[in-house]
Image 1 (cartoon, rainbow, N blue to C red):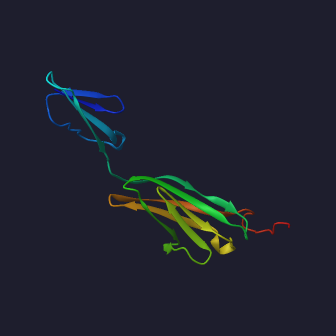
Image 2: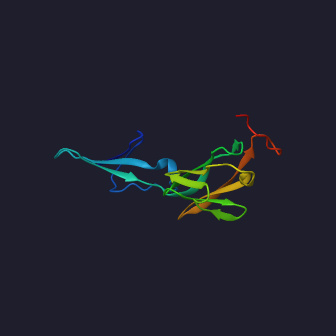
Image 3: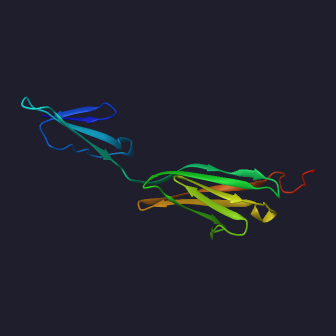
Length: 155
């Protein structure tokens, strides 16, 4: 007799040596436990981790507002397995870390930081998250703190 216990508490019983999950979803990822028992000896228990891969979905895209001369960051986050790679674009041109722009991606988040905002930095940016299963993107905006007519911040 085999008892298969999904560690969220759902239990399956049967005479089979396997568990087949049809139409598996990402919510079914996790640790599963298999327990084999009979009247002759103690039960044997093994655990296995099931990972469900899925394409990226942007879960957060945070636009921002800044005055010129200040640093500012745009944030993009995505849910995906395997962990996504990120790219940033402005006007269909890929952005690299250079000339006062810094891209930092950590796990499922990516940040585009402008170290010293100028008028040329205002506008639309695109965050793209990719893994081997797919791609997702989101538009983010860097807005002027003072609207179209930039005003100097008093010292």
